[in-house]
Amino acid sequence: MSNLNKKRILILSNHFITLYNFRKELIKRLNDEGHEVYISMPKSDDNKFFKDMGCKIIETPVDRRGINPLRDIVLIMTYTRIMKEVNPDIVFSYTIKPNIYGSVASNITKNKQVNNVTGTGGTFLKRNFVSEVAKLLYKMSIKKSYKVFFQNSGDKDLFVKNNMVKDNYAMLPGSGVNLEQFQVSELPSDKETNFIFMGRVMALKGIDQYLETAKVVKAEYPNTNFYIAGFIEEEKYKPIIDEHDSKGIIKYIGFQKDIKSWIERCHCTVLPSHGGEGVPNVLLESAAMGRVCIASNINGSKDVIDDGVTGYLFETGNAEDLTDKVKKFLDLSFEEKVRMGLTGRAKVEREFDRQIVIGRYLEEIRYLEG
Image (tube, rainbow, N blue to C red; front, side, top):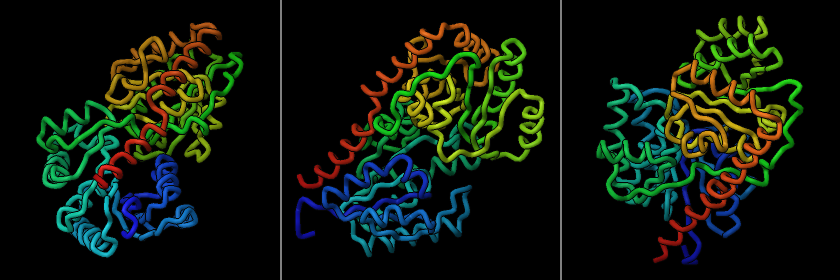
């Protein structure tokens, strides 16, 4: 580009909502600084949001599920064509397929790419064909990337151990949280105590442990409510959720676009995930609003929660331990719950402000000028 300080930036994403929820502040900053921003993502009416911001949208079909050799080869060819046409100074990619197949394309076109490993999504938790193929694809692609950002040390160690990255990696504090958008909210009255699970209803997210805990705690503490907000990802859970809902054990509220209002009305966020989370945004957003969080002791969650100080960690997959931690929270005084929540907010302000993340991306762009 004619102005050496302004760059042409290409962003690869598999969905509008992930960019909107976690990257819109970064993209706005890039536009405000005069960079030319292109976004490759699937077609959606919502894409107009970024178009109105000044971005150039390249509609690109991305099959988000599983491995389909034909579609994946087409995606590599599409990314290669886009990079040749746009000729970006730097490429930012998010989620598995844009990371892997975008890196293959950038290796072909010789463009600099920054990969963002925002969690493994459970891909590497099991030793099976898909897991081994994913490791191989990562090894073949992002090893030559300009930079790889990790959100937690566990994912970083996994990639280093499996020789999927060299020394071209760095750490980020997750996607960060917008502290202006998620401000401290007054804790509701403790006449009733509300817990909330936010995420897809599936075994990997720990829904079984949440349901079991709700059943036990509800019997002992009748003035408690256990909400579930999210799509039912695995169909086998639909009748189970319906049964627990009809018995009053849980309250299923489905996917909620405005999750902030639900964090406000609840006292505690519970994330019993079995892994693959990066740094969980539901924990960051809840803590930013002054809510105590209870989560399994997986990579990412351990970075957000200081056990016994800002919330509680429990043994992954252990419903009995989760139940104990929920009871421990219930036995706190109202003032102790408020104090613990505010301590969590202070930690998020120090370590997880989204402006820290934006600053790291801007550093990478400035390095290009050196």
